[in-house]
Image (tube, rainbow, N blue to C red; front, top):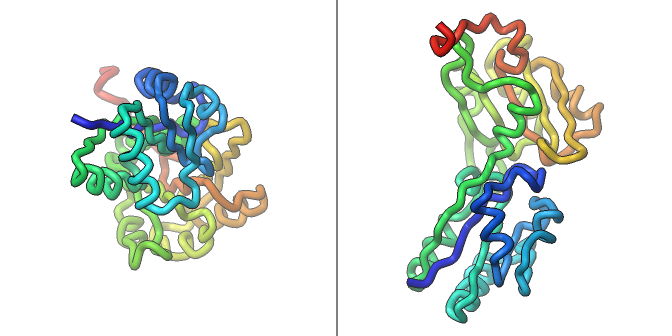
Length: 238
C-alpha cells in the first residue's frame, strides 16, 4: 500500500511536536510544509532532501507532489500547523490521494487551542463554570455564515480561530454580557507570544493597542480568569 504521513507540527514551539511527529520529520525524504505557519526551526530539524513550502501551492500541485514522491518510494511528510484536525484542510488532500491508491496516516499535534490555555494558565472546562468548549470561526471569504451569536448565548467557553483581522466585528456580534472575561492570545508558545486580557466590551481595542493584527485566538468565557470564576472543586480531589 502506498502511504504518506500528515503530521501536526504543534502550536509553534519546536519542542511541542510529538515524539512520533519528530521521528517522522527527521526520517522524511520529502517534506511539504505550511511555511507561513510552521516554525522554521522544525523545518531545519527535517532530514528531507526535498523540502516544499506549500504556501501559494494549489491543491492539485500539493497532491501531485505527494503522489510523485510516494510512487518513487520516498517517505513523504505533509507538515501542518497545530493539530491537522482543526481547520487543517486535510480531507481534500486525503480524498484525492485515496482515489489514486495512496492512503494517509495522521499523526496528531498539539493545537494552538491548548497552547493558548497554557498561556492563560487555565483550563477550558472548569467545574461550575463551563462544562463545554465551543471551537468556531467567523464567516468570511471561505465560509458563508457562522453561529457565533448563537454559540455565545450558551455561557460556555468559546474559542474563535481565524478571526484576528475581524475582532471588532466578531465581538460586536457576541451575545453574552459585555463584562464577560475575554482574552486574545497571539502566537501561543512562540518566543513572541502575547496575551491580552479584558472583557467582551474592550478586548478588541486592547489587542489592537498591543499590536495584534493576525495569528491569534479569541477566548471568551469566565475560565479566562479562573481565580474569580467561582469554580467548584473537582471530585478528583474529594
